[in-house]
Length: 106
Image 1: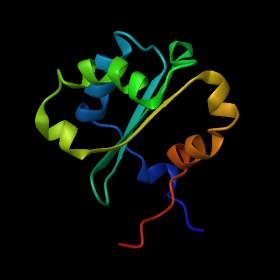
Image 2: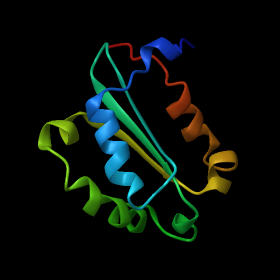
Image 3: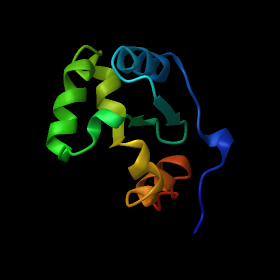
Image 4: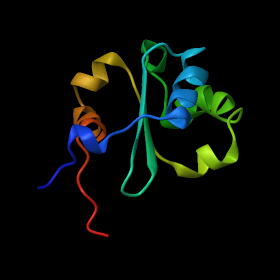
């Protein structure tokens, strides 16, 4: 399986803005975009997600995302919300997909 290289993961003002806004509540945030298709991927790792459903986690994050310009949100295609334990455990495959995403065949 082909994966993207580090050089294919870029940051810019848009990803930095996402990180800045989310770090107001969640210190462990990473965002990048892929220049080939301009999609933005975001990962938030926080112990506060423990015991919460996906919907509950989204309800914690979405109010912050709602403060961002629409053009940024339109390109946000991958939002991973995990606890530190999940990052290494059951959801490690999702974290691996964030860190080293598979290339799209499109």
